[in-house]
Length: 130
Image (cartoon, rainbow, N blue to C red; front, side, top):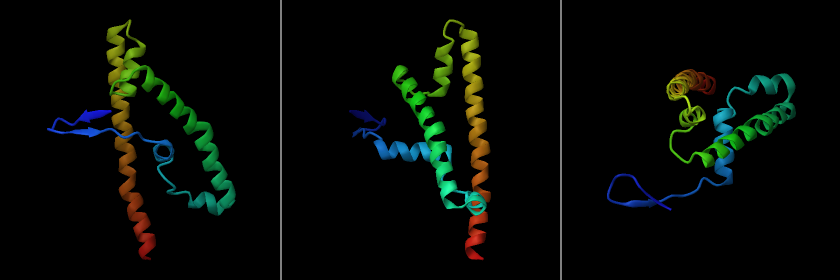
């Protein structure tokens, strides 16, 4: 498959692949292995690793399956906003309101989530430099 980015050339689209999907699911749900040191100190390494695996298996994997199913059913850019809007297509005013609320919640989540990382980087750099 080829897609054009609006320029004068077309680029071959490459699939995400299995390990790319595993990485995307892990970093989208856990944010990486940051801030798990207290869990390792409290319970040990194996319980912390087992907890990470259980969360990935019982939370992230079903979420990935739902997202895959909905993406296949509604193959358009827009994700959760379009999914919410298409769910109530028989009530257009409610569908538009729900899509707006979903978009607002996504933006709020991104704002709060991204606000954590500068402090986290500062803490880790402070620990690394002593």
